[in-house]
Image (cartoon, rainbow, N blue to C red; front, side, top):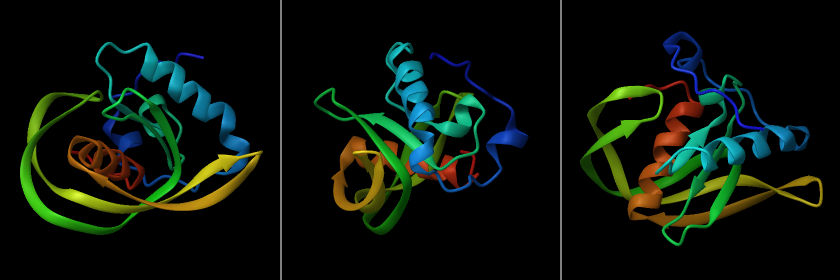
Length: 139
């Protein structure tokens, strides 16, 4: 189901609770909502009003991904970049890593399975932005 985007700083600044396998419908709502946004690249659950650590993003090949409870384990080559957000109109300069290692859970056959993967460039930047959302950090 497509949900309305939230721009309430009070809600967006709350750290998210861990997501569980029971949040599969929320993951689908995130995917549906992201697909409805022209040029949308990523979305966190709190951006649709649910404070769960759950994110979705579209990679450089146009494939969508879902991450439950993502955490950055390592970052390399910090840089300053200009970034926008679907929840705020203005762009800001933020520090992002060019390469990150992320630990997250993936839903497999109804159960969460822990994964670790490396990401580069634009995809790494989007994931860092979404993890900030999960931590209640606003750009």
